Image (cartoon, rainbow, N blue to C red; front, side, top):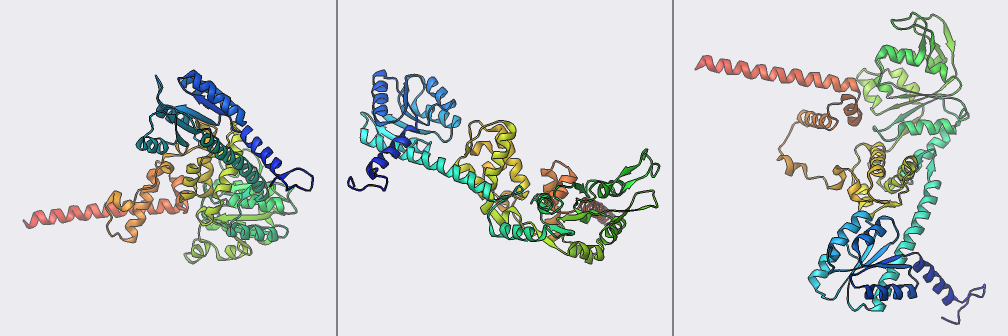
Length: 492
């Protein structure tokens, strides 16, 4: 090997030695022992090997070094007055889940070694220390840290390359959707975006606008499920003074506001038939009429409509105009749910981590392996929005500079228990399953019906209609039971 040289004339062995020194220099080690002579000897050995080292006989001082990130590995004695090595191990890993702790003892036993490893120790060494084994273990740790830094740099590069106006991912479903968006964006007049609640439909609408020729113009958003019909009409088309109670001044609607740009109608399936007819006129004639005014006004807008409903089914049921559906669905874009593209979860998690560390001013380094494994294994019924909220909360509550399992919500920290084991499963009718599911979602949302409707992927009016029907059925059942009891009393 000594005879092999690179083209530059640098010996390969020397290059490897240089790389090894660089890795060792990046791993700072703290030595903790109640024997000051052993501490001095261990620190001297580590520094000779090329590892930055410090030593102390006080566990509190070592914990302070862990808390302040002044060391990435700790070599700790097991038997110490005041705090033993296992207790130190527990407290140190709470402060920094990525810390590597090597315990050393003069009283080795297999059971003690297994217990130490189970609680998170990297290795369990015997005194006097064997320098070759210590060197080999620390080299493995230094290599892992160097690899982690390289992976982090690669992830940041990958994140930049696989992000399109905030849409992040590399799954086949997402890549297919993005390719369709690139084709549609320069030419569209009307687009229908379909997908579950929280999947990112508004993000898709904004990206379409940003990639269109009118990107410099306004992008207006209207949530059709958040407003009652009269306010929604005024919001979209504007009104004149005196058109209704409270209309004290003339106001332009979103179609006029975004003239020359793009209007995004979120949850378009919630519109009443009357409003649907007005929107159809905008699409067909590019004309709007303010509430209370006979005047027609010309507008030139691109329209992106989004829904979490099956609009074909809504048309068949008579709740959505067929002509409007065909106008909107000239071009359809389906946003895949997060469960369909679970492979994108690590990238999305890194994307949101970067976003919220900048927003909150907290320099977090990433996720522990067990935290990321739990994120990837979760079903994410709330889709990307739920993942974003989880990362946002974890960035605020993280106890260290790395997000660990304990920083995630309780629902993610423990695997979901088998529903059959919890409740005692029995056969149910589809109506009973539906009722039980809606009741559970309402309970999860603490009675917030709008949030429950969004989580269920149905309109607010549909949820109200179901709750009224369910309550009526309950009253009829109670009345039927009371009548049966009366008849039974009479017959006896």
